Length: 253
Image (cartoon, rainbow, N blue to C red; front, side, top):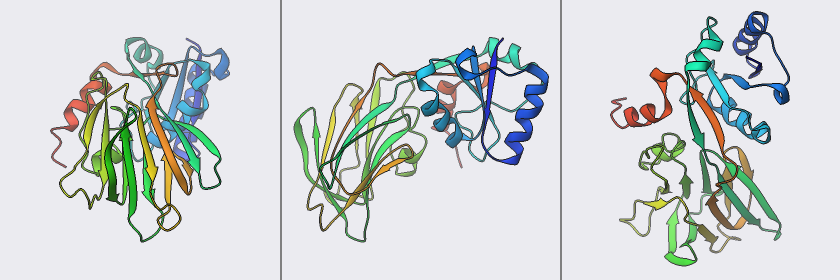
C-alpha cells in the first residue's frame, strides 16, 4: 500500500511521522493510494483543502487536541487498519462573498461558513433561501451554515442541531440572535442556496469565514453545497463518522 504521510508542525506529530515512515515508507501525495494525516481536526481540514484536487482518500490519526475527524494513533498494522476502514464522503460548502470594495472572493468549507460581527455593533443581516427572503432583518452576533460533518463543531457550540451524515441537509444557525427573538435556526435541504446581505455594512461591519479563510467587511455572501468537490475520509469500523455523530447527540459532557 502506497502511503503518503503528512503531519502538523507539533513535535509529537512530527515524531510520529518519522516512526511511521521508517516502518511503512513514504511516497509523494500524487503517487499515494492513501494520505495519512497526523494531527488534530484543524490539521485534517487543512489537509483536505491542500490535497483535495489529488482525489486520494485520507486516513487521519489523532495527535492533536481535537480529533473528531481522526482515528486513534497506533504504529502497528496500519495497512491492515486502512484496508478494514469505512469511507465517508464529505461534500463542502462553496462560499461566494463580495467584500466592501466590491471584490468577489470564493472559498470552500468542509465544516461551516460563518458570518460574524466585527465590532461591538450587532450585525443586521437579510437572509434569503433560493432567492426568497425568509428573514428581512436578523439582528445577531452572526449566523452560520453547517455541513453534517461540521454540525458537531461551531454549529453545536451555537446551539445548532447535530445532523446525521447521510441526511442530505444543512444547518442554518444564528449566533446570539436578538431579533426575531424566537428564531433559533432551520434545517435546510442540501441543495438550498443561502444568500445573506449585510445591512448597514459601513456602521455594522461583518466578516465571513469558510473553515479558516476569512473575508473582512463583506457586503453579501452566497452559500451552497458543492456536489463535485467531495473528499473521502477513512475511519476504523469501531470509530466510523456516522456513529460518532449519532453518539454525540447523547454525550453528557
